[in-house]
Image (cartoon, rainbow over all chains, first blue to last red; front, side):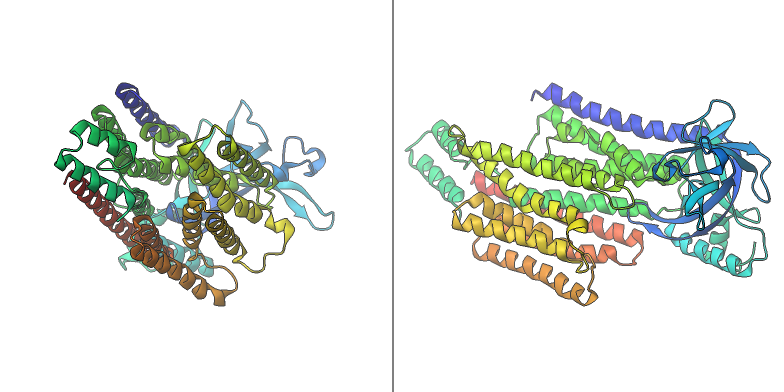
Length: 209
Length: 371
């Protein structure tokens, strides 16, 4: 291969990579800077990923009573095998939730705050032996953390579950252009990162808010 | 002393005695593959392995998720190794440096840099629900790397990325008939192409060897892989090490066939495929009491290869044993609960030591050839 062709091939490979990574950063920066805040009550624990290290597995779920195509509340129309779901968020959530899920669908609608969600499953009716409404809509649930703090965060959550006195933890998201980005998890309005940092330094007891 | 070293010495003696002129000596050396600076597979693989370890170390450091860095610093960290590898490839192209000793490790390092960079961005923005999606993104960004570096190892890594993506895509019920069918088609297709290369009367020299290597590779790796994919429907795998036994058995069968029918290429492929299978001996499976004996068998395989290589003065066999041993020890370390930061530093250190040794060996070989 000619030197020149080879040089431009390497340059093209580099350009594709820089553009790809740049596009990813720009896309999610836009969501963070322009997106609306959505808060969902959650629980969390700390597993680890060999590639990306330790993270908090955030279990943030909202129920929804309306699904496109699920007439009469019947869920037995093949959604269990699908992998892409869209949820329409509307203001007026209950408890710590800032929003509610007004509707779920297999395709995004045009009006309103539609977002892509990783999972949406019907409730299992053991008597009828089939899934039915309300559907359980799961929000993105991986909050990557410093490996020195992830263990502390896990301990704080475990203590909070045992105490069960404070408010439920809340997953904070930003929503823009159909994308959801998990920003943080808060306990009584304080970031879990901040609480873990304080606990690591011994300044705060794990159950303290 | 191997044949090439002997011939190199003879040609140097003929040149010194005036039997041949410089141009004829160079043409003779080139014709019989005894030209100075020619690299052995052992050196090449050591370089690739060193780059692989360094890349793994970078990924482990990324996985530590250091809290101190802000988003701008993390983006710079994601881009820096990718830019460095791209700039190195462009520099090599500008200078016309296309030697495998440089390009093979560079290809592997570049792939690892893309994986690490994508991972950092994914961590920063908490994009993590789809492992298959991340793998596809890494594969798309690194698609040109094998072409830009002409690195066989990078090509293999890219193909492996595709295979892992296919596995990650298969649904949670374990229904992977599509994957099994794809593997079977691959085995049949590559076998057919290789067989044609070998058996066609016009296929000569390198083509025949390439065909035998392909055929040996697909039999030693493709067939047991296919068996592993379909095993949930064929037998009840309560014995967790069945897949390892399948790979060991396929390598042993190919090695025996190579010895019996005097096919050197099959012996070489079977040795590497067997070493590759042993490289997975650290994976814990059931029954638990067999975990340590299987790991010990992997280490014994490494020691046997290194010892056979040293006794027979075959550098590639010795390196296969050494690389297998280092890998097994590091893999156990990587699997442990030690912090990702410590793992990353350890892996980068091991990778740099092997890369350093590789550079030293190349220079030594060049010096020897110059004499």
